[in-house]
Length: 446
Image 1 (cartoon, rainbow, N blue to C red):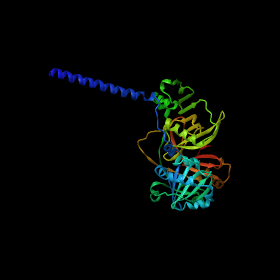
Image 2 (cartoon, rainbow, N blue to C red):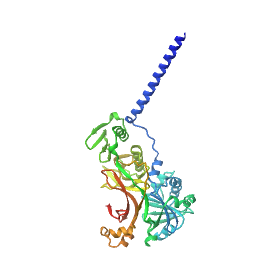
Image 3 (cartoon, helix red, strand yellow):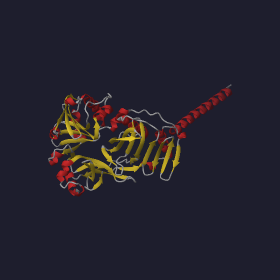
Image 4 (cartoon, one colour):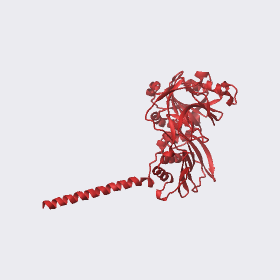
């Protein structure tokens, strides 16, 4: 009897072990099969648009020569954006009054917040992207910045014009942010405070700024077959069994029906969809959402990406947009030093992505954060040293013509591991000039 019991328990243990092994084998099969199958990813347009269309800087004004620039302020933007959207939604031409630049600059001497965008954005698009309601704005403006006073009055800078919104106030609670601005931001001054020129442009109020050594690498070199297969499944939206792979000396391509994705050794990822489509109405909002979903699903990049510019395009009678996206690094715009003007380029026709090109560069891992103090030359000094490259003959004329001035990162190379440099970006009459911020040497003209 005891012997039978012992045999029974031994058989039971063996049976349980077999079941356990089968379960583990099943998990292993699932794990290794994941890249071969199309995954259903949940896309939230609100999260993506909040990242991509976040302003490039938040300025906290405390008074004369007391302007503090914040680069990392995502939590504040999330907190305030709904209120801002509601104000823009209720604005109309009847309560919009134009003011001059001198009046607008005088407002900077009062306690206030200013959200500045990297490039102008339509009021209607901004409402739809950051607001709860999807509707058109009653004001036909492309907004550069939004000014909110400490008593919640709202002013807009749009296409180099300045406006006050009458009868509309926000409900922002900004006392804590204003009280902590000196600890959170970097002190800047405006052009009038430095040069006596009435211009809505900020420059550092110091001969040095803090930064760190940052390197970007060509990331396609590090892609294993496993990762490339996974990316091919994502981009082509079909199982790996149906995808054709073509390996060449300089690139690897994946093809499914009329779509292909290629990974080039020089860091370029390129996608094309040759399916037939017909889009007779150009819809900017739908095209933007399609672009954001494509970015989110395939590259996973939205948190450090911003929309730099938009061009209307046409293809075989269909109407769409070419979007140029660039990256941000440590809160500053990252400029691609290349014949291409952007890290990401995309042709979108409403719900159809026709073409996508990305420079697949990633920041090199650096476990140590070594803070550096970088010398900052005065912009007037830099212009003096480079007068011969400008059509104007006098520095003062160039300063007066300056449309925008920013401090950006720029990469040294697109063919190898590249150290990022800090540079001044000057926008004058539609042309961009980039100068080394410490040496004053010209890097690039676009």
